[in-house]
Amino acid sequence: MTFRNLMTPVAAVVATLALAGAAHADPATAKAAVDAAKAQGVVGEQSDGFLGFVNAGAASGEVRAAVAEINAGRSQLYAQAAAQNGVSPAAAGASAFRSVVQAKLKPGEFYQDAGGAWVKK
Image (cartoon, rainbow, N blue to C red):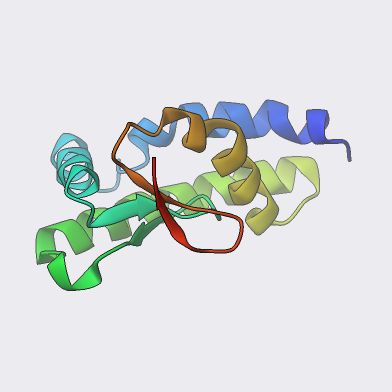
């Protein structure tokens, strides 16, 4: 499987990441909670394509629930992309992070570098 072949469905999957909180009773509320937590440096984008806690101690129950909901949606999307492309869900998630998620980070938000350290954009 070539990188290009993997990226086509992964790009489609990642395009739906904004809807990944759909399992939440109010996806807009989950997204808003995560966006606010990102702006505060509490939540960041992990290099595996999932959300993670930069400062877990500062995360409210609402933020923890929103992160869990969004990550559950992302997990399903990565599994679908992986099945379609004969790769692991981990590879699909990491590819989505590198190709789409990282490019959408706003200044001041955190992400994990290749070594797993949190870096502020």
